[in-house]
Image (cartoon, rainbow, N blue to C red; front, side, top):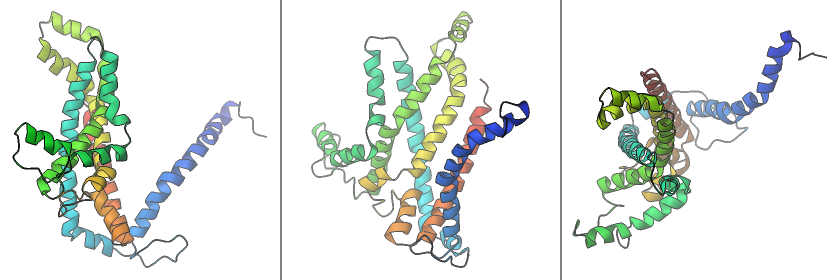
Length: 297
């Protein structure tokens, strides 16, 4: 019988408490990753549990890096990351600073800011698909009524319109999380720093640039990482709105992974796309976290 109250056994007791969580994480995270890597090294059409493994080869990765579709999907994903991440950061910071002020109805304003985040993604995307419809959507109707356009925008068949429609819905869906996290960061900034800046003669813009932004840098880094990973993995918004079209204009790496695995039944090639996407996300996350974590606070 082990006496866990004894000092020499406390470390063992800690490991025993952590063991269930470690085993669970290994089962739901590590094992699927290892399985994907294994499938990506085989010529697998449809993966089946218990099936004999095929010879390992790098043919899927040779196909991947020589494929025009992969580089185009990577470029589309990169554009989405920069456009959605940058715009969501600006809107999220602006709304966070707005609802951080004291005014009547602030609680309702905070609820309104967070509302898009609370709506299920597929439900919200279906609603936006109806609103963006080129024949009877309310977006085209409104733009025609105010005279900004003289004919309906073909969101489903025009490459640029489809790309910006997808990005717009992503920004609408993603900025609330950024706003909520930045609001928490704003509330953690000591008021004494603003008072000291005022005593030194700093104006509103100088207080924002030299007090608010440096204090928010770690939070901005975390939110940018979360937004980047979300854009990389998001599937529902693109699939419901455009299914990756027209002509691949909105085919991101996640859509390409789905198409190769479940539309063309080339699960080995689909797994290769997923593994490369995972590696890219890991490098980007490490770079962003390291960059903003080392910023002056």
